Length: 302
Image 1 (tube, helix red, strand yellow):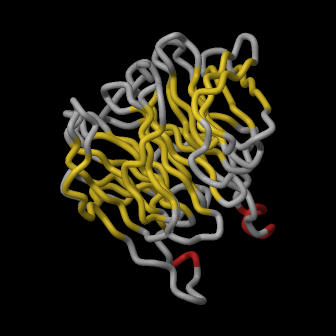
Image 2 (tube, rainbow, N blue to C red):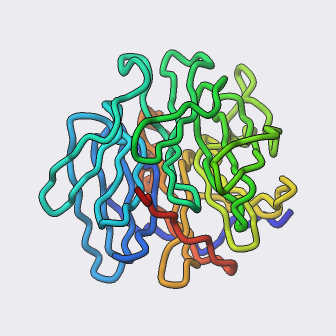
């Protein structure tokens, strides 16, 4: 397995988030969006001009997706919303299917047919979180039995869907019916050793957080607390390891006109002061060039 400790990593955005998540490269605007979940903020960065703008909310945004009409779909603790950046207006799409005192929306993306899939995180850390699908009318519960829903992505042909439970250190794969959105044949795609009591972070590889798939069908996954991003083959084998200058990567996405820039959001929330002193880029958006382009982001079609 190639281990890449010097992959030309740079800070794309130096203003840190508390917990950056859900980065996406907007196909029309050619800019990067991402959420700061505890900061209750949506960010937008234009790498051509260097302009970084943001919008603040009263609830946490867990993930976002572009819509056909130019708005954004936001999955927030208080439900699904259509957000108009020009006016700052949020229009309600669906109420949360959970108790918002103990659960919130987390990782979410659109499938190749334009349905929005979003999972939840159960904050008391019990396996009561679930995965939902939204086609424009109501949320449909599609899978369950996890604690922290993450890692949504699709294979290039759209016939395999990936989904992870970060707390369980496990990435799952499903057979995916593009026509109906039905899932079948849930199986373990990759699993990683859990951190043992007293284990030093230097000896811990991290747990799978957000992910993205490239044009060769490889699954890039951020390993939270592992200080790295992994590239897994379609068979689930680690084929590349990119070592990062921060402990907590949260999610990668592909951007740039050629989709050959890998952007990685990171976290600094609740990290030890000594760690933050040694890792000044914690919370920043990192970037590196890759040889294989990523798949373009899917757009909400409803």
